[in-house]
Amino acid sequence: MVNFLARRPRNDEETQESFTDTPLVPAASVAGAALSVVIAIMTFLAALTASFALLLTQASHDWRGQVGAEMTIQIMPRPGRDLDADSRKVVEIIANFPALREARALSKAQSEDLLAPWLGAGLDLSQLPVPRLISVKRDDSKKLDEIGLRTALDAALPNANLDNHGAWMQRLSTMADVVVASALGVFALVLTAMGLAVGFATRGAMAGAKDIIQALHYVGAADSFIAGEFQRHFLRLGLRGGAIGGGAAAVLFFALGALSRHWTTSAGGEQAEAMFGAFTLGWGGLAAIAALSLGVAGLTGLTSRIIVHRSLRQLH
Image (cartoon, rainbow, N blue to C red; front, side, top):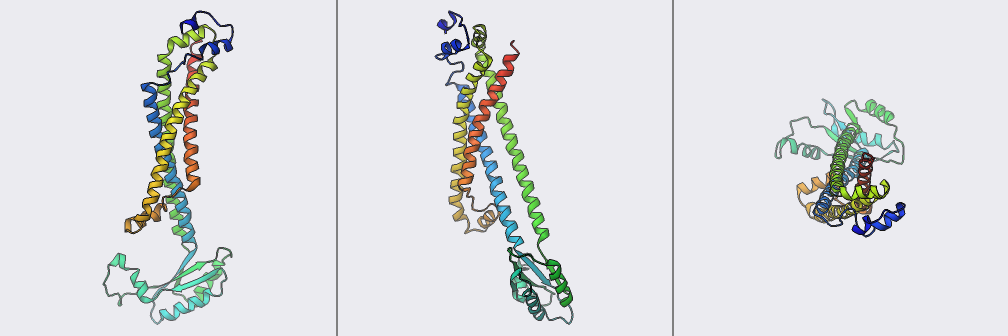
């Protein structure tokens, strides 16, 4: 550094050549190692949040596909009505609609079994007016005349109610949208916290190299050159922390995917799989985590450069 200050370079290129052997920001320092740890933690949390949002979006699409692929016809008990005959009549009506490819009428015992989770097992439901249910599967390749179906059911069976599961689909969609929006909010907060940490670290590094920065200004170094040195330093820290955090998130989801095969044997595991799927991101999810890690590194370097530029302008 003494030889560097012994003469004043004539232009920016000569300044840069004289400065190549003297890094403006130390490559290895306690502050740099701490910032790498912070970036790794923030990247891990961001990748975790984004991955769960992706899994929930995929699961929501599957839910709506399964719910929307079926319809339910409920036959209410009424005096003088034979529920078994009414069930057969519904099946005959459904056969006249090409967009409905299968109808399965539940028996009295099967309908009563559906009430067991709410009323308990072993109850005698023979005296209760338990409705009969008919599960109907739709053919998505054909358009259903739902108005015509309702009209035909009302004309033949006044005690039949058609449920197209639209209310359930709306609730599932709303729930998924709220959870995904919350995950995106957490994701934004994590990135904001990381940006603040990088900003404080950049200002601290500038304060530690204040004399060198002033000397560079004296010999005619451009602001872009000084900002570039900080950007390269913090970009390296961002790449290191992003790789560690993103790699940890990928390993975690790989482990969850492996464990999910054993969870399916329990009731809780079945519910978790129904909620989030098999915890498998696939190559697309892994690519998203890798892109997020690179984005974090780029954001780290860019944030540092912007802060250095603004601080240097205040010195002029």
